[in-house]
Image (cartoon, rainbow, N blue to C red; front, side, top):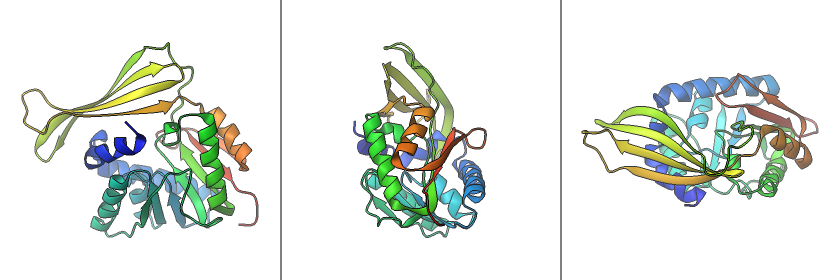
Length: 252
């Protein structure tokens, strides 16, 4: 399943990953606003190139930021726009691969890509291409902020890990949600399972699959520097994943 197909399939149910999506929107928005405020204190505009269904964009919008979104999934983009409208926000979005953004050079103040979006790409060379595109889009004095998992050393090929999210209730139906990771060297396949709870009524099980590259934050930080970003640093304990920030040199 392609990344686009994965998120198109998941878009209507993406919120089931969270025990309380609204609380997660608020919490992530507060954390990102704090980080952006510290590093780019005069910035009030943000480009979210992995907007998904809007989790981070909605949180930042609620804190006064003007957010534009982009995502490879057209169905996720449509949901993000609708979710923003329901909350009284304007969230312009486009469907695009973040390696080829339909934005002018030096047009974005701060670019974000959260929740481990970057490792969906197949190789470090693909990631380097994405970071070069982000560098093109960001204005001098601006920068990028991304969050990603820290995998450490991948386990042996064939290892299967189960990551349960627990039970969720949606539209009166109960579901059990979990991720199953199957490792293949430096890559792993994710099966996201959304299954009606035993004995409960609900829609049939949803099984969507994608792959990730288990690249480390240290390696991505090196690629950020190679793309031209300066003062690249890793920040822990401020977001639910490690965060990397980098600045584009020049006047702000």
